[in-house]
Figure 1: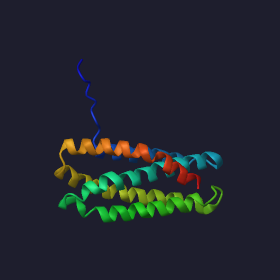
Figure 2: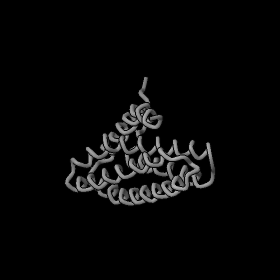
Figure 3: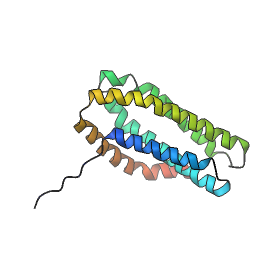
Length: 158
């Protein structure tokens, strides 16, 4: 019997898809009030923390292996830290507090800057890594992310 080969998705496509997902949630966050707003923030919190931790465990170590891309890691990690701090600040607020929506806007701007920065990183990565390497990293990214879900959901509950 022939083996069916599943096409793995490269890591850059996965990361870009995650950004699109979070952008959709941000578009929704600007509309609702109350419980729906909390639910959407929780989705953003989980998505961004999962994304950041997975990138830090899978993508950034791979970037350090190439002279052309290792220069980007420190700034990207700093941006992740900034996003994590803002997430925790929002988590401590009630949606009815005026600061809540201001922090959501700050988070969105910080994320948009990070996404723009990573576009440059992606171009450098495509120059250094083969399609095979990108696919293998994509597989690692998906597996690592799946393992981290319960930890990130627990962090939200704290």
